[in-house]
Image (cartoon, rainbow, N blue to C red):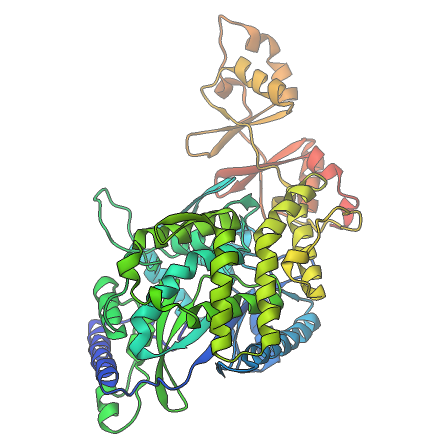
Length: 626
């Protein structure tokens, strides 16, 4: 997540100094642009590979810093969570066997990570959102212990004015409050970079926006979060909501999120783009900068524009313009941030080649997109693709077209011409674009995941189903067949449950009562739903009592006395033994045995989040050794 050398606590003087450098950086960029100093005679590509570390139970591991230290390779760096790492690949000139070189480097570096991870009892997985991640692993204690991450967390919370609220609606619904930015750690990406001729920047950037919807639709791989079926690429909505700094207000405003697709076509140069970003987004972080970029230019040096890049690193456009310096020359590039990690290296490379081919093969008819296409259609296409993947219908040049037809009939041919234009090896062109074609015709990563999760849930409890799905993903990634060829899973007899905490086996589909409900009604609730334990909660879902079938029998006559009309409050047990989601299952069993009870409500703070009963533990083969 960017530069680690930042000021965590900034006084007014330091902020003023930083803003001064920021304005100098804009002037420097404008000067370099006008004087033709920005590199325009070569095209390079680059990428960033993020991946997850999981333990032997297929849950997020927390040893990223140890693994990183043992890898001892500058290509690797940390991410927000202690179970994610990132690989920064070397820039490669776009020609000939460029993609084969990138693929070789990804595989060799992932193999290095795999060897070290295995030594530390971990495995690596490529996925947009790890299916097995739970809310427990999104606590602040799982954040990588670097000042920059803690600073961003506090700054985002302060800007928002309180907790972060997530509300995602797909096949299922997820609505939850969280006290940190750690939900962003669920997102794992394969970020792709393309160097752009500065004179063609506006047309290239607008074209990148126009193709984002259909490209995303072919690459979706993140349909689930916390066991809920949400969007085909849930990362899109999750990333925006997890670090949204906009405070909720009764006033209607047009303030844009820091994670945004944009609200209009780009007009002008990259300098104009950055001026607009500075105008609309506050500076969150600062850093000490020794020399003005303008002074460096006067000395004949190429400035790194550190202030501008730091600001840009806290504005998360799905297509993000970037300035950099390589081999002593300044360049600009577009960073594609919306593609998920995985499911295989081959799938990722196919995504890369498809996008690069489209960017380099742009027909001249699309040089002036604001004249021929409504930007609202472009943004709508992106959201539709994120929601429904290859089942979406795109608005393309004013006409509706199914996304698979658009890709197969129009975009794949454009991509092929673009790759041929750059003289990419024909064998590589066919290999990668055929992966995209097969995926669009057969199944995306999201489609495979949903089909199999539904299938597994018919045979295993939800938590075990998520573990089994994660294990299957790891197995098929090792086979290196693209996801379009992954089979439907049927046999789970070899799967051994790794459940060890109450949160892994608790029931979350709860029937509850209110204190004011009639006692006779609570009896009906239990009878209708075939349950023996009924939690009683207030309007904030705080547990206030418990009614059990055995307890209810004690008040049988009173419950049926229509003159008395007992309420749940009058008959419920008010002193209830409870556990947390992190309570070991063995400890929960001991509590039930000690107190001779058949259930334990599960709380987070005071809120009811689940219940564990004798039935939930009956399927465990060896509870004594948990």
